[in-house]
Image 1 (cartoon, rainbow, N blue to C red):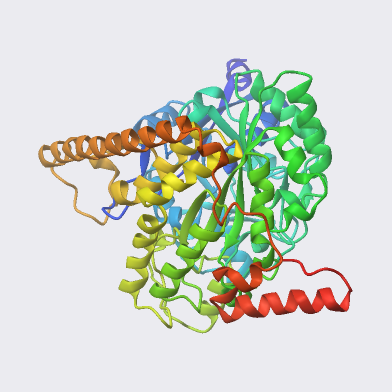
Image 2: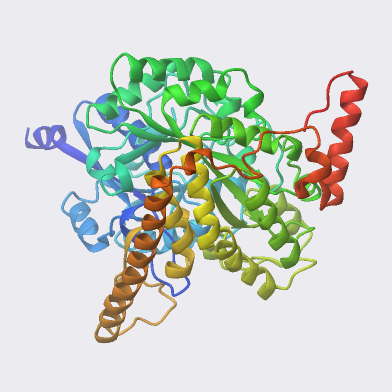
Length: 593
């Protein structure tokens, strides 16, 4: 009888951890408030929550779920081990959404749990990408096998329940590989995080994926090989469910993480539902979406984006040189459409952000400087996120280098799209690293940021919102030496969080250095905030600002192709214009610029 009572009250402890990774000094990158929450963590929590509600382990076993995002929360490993020990190790640590640059840190987190004989399972893009594109041992997957970590490849909808059941029975398999059987996601548990997790992010924002997969073939991308090229979607009902779940706890801002929401076949039904929730039910939605450079050609897409609550849009611009785009198989990007597309977003007062990759085959330091100048002068773009072209495990680029035995850096920690990991034909490693650092200061010069503020006033964009974003992107690299997307408010460190292969610093030296450095950085940050805010104040008060006009804001004209450097400074640009004119002539339509 006692055993039955004990069994009925057993609680399986599921600890979900999203690892961070190490900075150049070997310390975990962690913030008091991080930029955005992890969608992988939200997706797994939503599925685990559903398993708990359905009593997936049986009516006599409950499931307690702990959620930790290491980018904003310190992992107290000893306390977690003690918690599990008091529960007879009846539970599992799940390392969620582990990217290649997070893999070394994930292994370091897993090690003490495995030494305490606690079940550990790891999933994410690194494991899935390596199994999809390489052999079963690359890259460092044997480290999981040697440590006894169960590997999960693929997506967890409909599969997590089996993993939890195996863990509860002490029978975790070495590998759960579902890469050839990606599930549908319509009607599945929606991504969700409790408010106490979201409170550790800037602006109380959450995230969700309305769809997965991408039909394009970009060689640097891992998504097409991990999530597949066949797109799968959530329904408008699913989206309403997750919005209402979050609104019930006061959350109304979301990053929709679809790699390209414009190619979601149900985009209009989803937008219509969000518009209804916003306009008829009073939910003050604020959204950020990711789209391609041809989204403006979809009737009503941009207009409905505005009504649905989109305030920021991320565009996969990648480059302004068509030769580079062709080399990366980014054939869907047409530079002849860039200005028209960006002006369409400007007309709605929506902030535009773009990814821009440095290190394509035709790039040199001089061409990169030239292209940044062209963007500043001719494209009505607000924010650029610079990235180093990186052969990410799971991408075609990495697979090609790996198969051909071409040297790549052995340290997975630096595969974070801000470090150089392999050689370039036209730039040395030092030149490549230096132009990456320089690119931030070139684009976010004081003069150009004032230009961006003038454009914001002229197009009706909220200036205060732009100031916040510009401050982050202009200061994070020089002050913190990490990418702005890895940033947050107030960097936190602890001497115990250094890479195990690096010497532990004496606390008597570590803490004064850390506190002093933090004070200096925040004084510099305060100066930057004061300066840009004052400029924004003056520009907003200037009566002429609303009538501001420059080349970037000038409507598309028939002679753009002969006047603008965007089309005349590269052979690829000239060829792109000729191609458009030829197509227009053959189809007897007016040329598109």
